[in-house]
Amino acid sequence: MIRLEQVDKRYGNGHVALSGVNLVIRRGEFVFVVGPSGSGKSSLIRLLYREELPSSGDVYIDQFHLTRMRRSQVPRLRRQLGVVFQDVKLLPQRTVYQNVAFAMEVLGASSREIQKRVPAVLELVGLARRKDSFPHQLSGGEQQRVGIARALINNPVYLIADEPTGNLDPDTASDIMRLFLEINRRGATVIMATHARDLVNQVQRRVIAIDHGRVVRDELKGAYGHEA
Ligand SMILES: Nc1ncnc2c1ncn2[C@@H]1O[C@H](COP(=O)(O)OP(=O)(O)O)[C@@H](O)[C@H]1O
Ligand SMILES: [Mg+2]
Image (cartoon, rainbow, N blue to C red):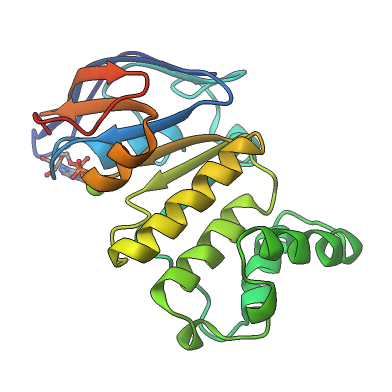
């Protein structure tokens, strides 16, 4: 479970990015975080993987108290999380397979585990046939699938995505959305920041709308809404 209590986030320049945010996200949920540009979506996402700390308030993820934990514990937290960004940033000199395998290697997985797991995850994201391609040989949608495979490779409890379809055309974005739904169906909790109105309205999942750093709406089976 993810829990935010009275979270405020101010940056050094005095910008208020989040204000009085209270949230509970349970395991197994699929949650959209929507809102206009500058409303605080990315700030909220960055708090979840402890890239940033709140200015005040508390963030909890399962047994981790993010605002109190030692820096040395952060890798243990991050092992529970997969993170997907708008801008995928693959290693250009490595193949699809090697890019995904690398995320296991850095955590010390054995080559046996890697040889078993990577093909299974590439199959899940629909890239089994492209495993020997290099990033520059892939379309934007395929590159994002590699990013998703990399985020999933260590079997995270939470998959956190910040505008994962932001660089994609509408049809490709729809395909990627279906992939996130499938991943959720298989058990991962998905939290996705997006301003893709059509995608949000298509799938009728929980929608948390933020505006000027405040949660202005939180609906199960929601729509993108007019305020955002
Ligand atoms: N690193 C930062 N330093 C200063 N201000 C920031 C920083 N990141 C975001 N902000 C400000 O915080 C507010 C929320 O930004 P952000 O969380 O990126 O919103 P969104 O992802 O919804 O576009 C904006 O006013 C933005 O300018
Ligand atoms: Mg953002």
